[in-house]
Image 1 (cartoon, helix red, strand yellow):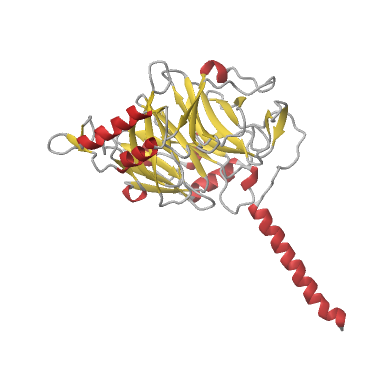
Image 2 (image 1 turned 30 degrees about the vertical axis):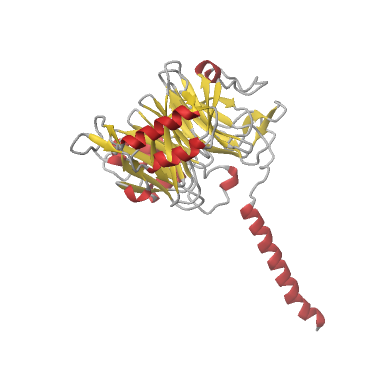
Length: 411
């Protein structure tokens, strides 16, 4: 009789233990990744092409009259390294990582570049160099340390690759770093004895974090990130100078310029901007300028000189500009992602790119990261197929999704 009474308690205890084990696995999946003795970096897909087409169809991607899921599948790129990536450890020894997680994407000349970080924080971050002609993995660029590498952008005029980072310490802030073409294009991971050489790193003291980058019209746009969807943060623009670097100025000079713009209350409009009857832009109440003034006042010495800015909500992962429109990719956790289309004609320091200003919103699979616009094509990077997220009960995308911009936005 005692044994019979004990069984329910034992079963209950086992059930509680199983729940705890499952909960721990949900919160800490694959802490070091599955072991593997394979050498090099895989270039094959994690899921089948039919699986990929099914995800596209379920979200209505390729449902227009000119595009199809099959066409998008043909033009998309398999993300390499999701099974195993050759990289370096903290002692610059070649090693293999099985938890690389894709983040940034950009077209750089004849290559498509995709960045990834080790989710177990055990190996150096990387950039996959993919040939646009053959669509095959050409090499792996190993970066110094374990940055999140949320943003990639390419300055074709000066042949510079820009990457996001973070400066640790008491006064931590966003950073952007440039890499010369000669350094990353010829980098050979099979013989690497050190990470790829960084040309220069700039602290962005007016931003807490850098989530994405875009080069547009001679400027580098850097976007901040917060986890709360309705929180307010900013995108800031910096002029790219003739030598390919970013303009820096003394803190007092930058603050004085910001105050002058605020005091003047108006800026002369450029072509395409919404203007008043006098052809001017009213920026007196610009929240971006107020935010910048506070941040600059807390700094010292030379800082990057912001020349424009925009308000955005949180959870933004990528940005692209086409004509009078700005596209923002937005995602967080396992919820469906959003591709928001905003009007870009608001004028200097007055861009309002928050959610409620969306001209159109498209629902996409979860875990959409950075995006890029190039040659009339939209490139979308997802992290859902990484080993650390494969247990998630969501649609998985193991490719850089490529589609025509006009199929998304219409004519």
